[in-house]
Image (cartoon, rainbow, N blue to C red; front, side, top):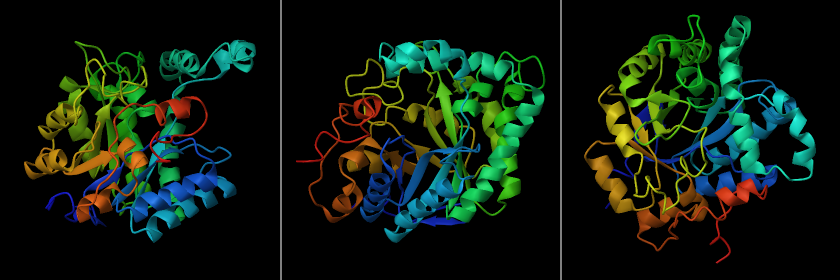
Length: 363
């Protein structure tokens, strides 16, 4: 039972024991709690764990600092000890705090909350991308390659280039208003992310590279960064030629967090596999492996999608936060806790600076 879900799979030269991926997630947990959680997910049977928010730029807890490097090495060791492979999601922020310094008093007194802050930060993206000097564009591209080399040294098995954040904002005609070779046509807007992938490939030639392909849509409008569906025939071949090994397909961000992390009562993304339509569009452009995500918890549904080749890998976050032993329990036919997509303990816990948890975790 569930032969496809639990069958081995290869991405580039990397062998995975099954098709289950822990999706890149901002967890907001203290270091020891984070390591313990990653270890539990690995022991629970997940084949690949993607660690989100691995900055490609030097920062206190980044791969570039001794403390940050040691932290990531411990996380890799914890994943490997549990039998999982581990991937670093490399990203660069596309927003600027400097224009928001005038709001500091309201932030300190909590008159401006986390969601308000998010809206304000997203409002800085267009200027950040459009006005970035060419030398900074080139430096940021190089940083992806530098960070990939550090990730390999820390013990990561593969890297994911985050196609949202800065890569996604350069890709988006809503944010990218540049008039040079990095703006305008889809081919030009793809240039930043393509060159970031090339920098990674040159730095770690034998390492698999996943690309988180952030899709935005109109009618209705969801997502602001990322790529429109009708631009995929431009972006996907260019990324493939640059060295991408696989695609992780999801909704673009820079809107309400409840869109890319939709609750069960979302007005548009209600069903299980709610982003798989984007996978279908990407599939028409490539034969590379595709990882699908979107409110997944039913092994029967997932097995059916894998069986028809709609996706090659399945990524989940909230279900594995709800029950990190979901893979083992499904494989052994045991009862498991099922995520109800309420977003109460995970997303809302993160926004309250309490870390991502599940409301059922103490039951």
